Image (tube, rainbow, N blue to C red):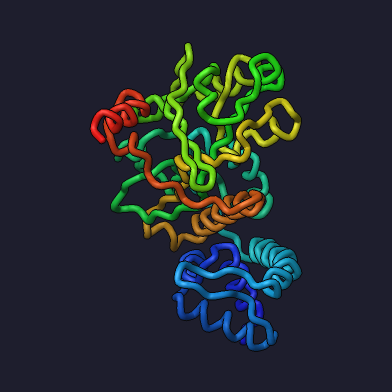
Length: 335
C-alpha cells in the first residue's frame, strides 16, 4: 500500500464527506479511493468511516486519526511543492481573469505566497464582469462568482459561499441588533446590484427547518463595481451590509464590524468557480496556479466552523427582474 497516497485519499474523503467528492478533487476514480481507504483501515485495524447512501462520516477513531495526521500531511505536501518549485522551473506568464470581490477578498493577499514558491512565473491579473468572448480572449484561468454557464470551459467549483450580516458597533448600539431576520425590515440595509443589473434586495435565511426571506429597504443602491462603498458606509455606522464570510475577516477580528443573526445561515450566497480551457491544464505554470488557487479556497473552507453546502441557484438569477424581491412578490401572487 502506498501510505502517502492513502493518507491523501483519507484526508480528501474526510473533507469532502464522500468518496466521489474526494475522487473529483484528486482526479481519480471512486473505486480507487474506496479501495485505498479500505486498505488503510485494514492496516490500522480501525474503521475510519461510517458508510451511508448519502456519503461517509468519520468514526471516533477516524476523527482522532485525522487530527493527528492532517497537519503532518499538509507540511509534507508543502515541502514537496517547495522542493519541486526549486527544481522544476516553469517560466512564463499566466493570465488570470478575476472578479474584483475575489481579488480583493482573498487572492491579493495570497499572491505573494505563490510568487515566493514560483518566482519565475509572471501573473497578469485582469478584471472582468462577464464571460463574453471579448472579455475572455487571451485569458488562461478565470475566477468567477455565481452560477456560470459556459460550455467550452472546464468548470470546477472551488468554494461554497456564505453570507454574513453585519454593521458597526455604533450602528447596533443606536438601532438595536435584530434577533430574527424579519427585523431587518426596520433597518437601513445596503443592497448590491448584481452584474446582470438585478438589485439583490431579497435576503434569505435558514435555521434548521425554519426559513425566512426579507425584502430589505435602503435609500441607496450600490452597483457591483462599487460594492466597497457598502463596506465603507457600514464601517461608518450608516447601515447594515451583507458580506461573504471569506472577505474582510480583519474587520470582524478587530471589532470594526459585528455580525448579527449568527445562528442563521444564508442559502443563496454565490459559490466561487475556477474555469479554464482543457488545453491550458497541460501547461505546467498554469497547472501550478490552478492547484494553488484550489488549495487556497480549500483552506478557507477548513477555517469555517461548519461545512458549507453549495447553494442552489436563486430564483432571481433564473428570472429577469429589476429587483430580486420581485420574484418573491410574483410567487405570492401566483401560489
